[in-house]
Image (cartoon, rainbow, N blue to C red; front, side, top):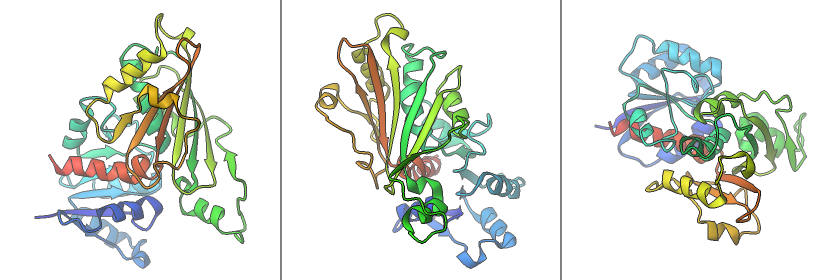
Length: 310
């Protein structure tokens, strides 16, 4: 018997890509609400309560409303892709590779908070090093990143793609979050195991999908004896045996002249790099992913599959 999946918000960017990833699958049955009825609260509530897993692709307040609709139904399991529950203690954080027990937590959870795209890269780089004792939790972490414009949803897609849009954006690249109070910072700090909030500077490029996240480090401010090789070895050991997150060999990274932000567009994997000169003073940790792949829709499907395997 196939599992019944309802994507609440299936007509949005993340929801559409989740549907695409599940097209042709026989182990799941997609429950769907017509776009014209998406504001029909009674129909939406009925579909939510009829599902085995509800995937919420909604703004924060709408996600909280959906969760409230399911408060009396302990059978339906939830994956929420908003920021509403990413630091909630009762929700499993949906980054299966962030430590060895996380996949099992997701597998057995009723409530799973899908990670943000930027935090997936930042946490993927930082957390293993904190756990290995190579990055002090008090280190002043900086996270610099660029995302494809689909991360801004339908509104930004229209602004970037439609020249006649009243708020058309013609810049090839722009910074935002200039107050340094981005909504992703709390989950970066909590799940990155950092005692201090990281300084996060996000930006958007004029490409639909793709992402680069960078965490630069001063080796002199890390524990004595930490090198580019020891940082790379810790990341490699942490992700050993994983097929979605991989660490590029140091020798291969040293041969690169550039990293292409769209290299993994359309894929659900993430690649991690450690750049720097052996014996040098600085290291740049880099994560490469698709903001709608491992950064959103791909991660939601991965979490769904883990939950269905319970």
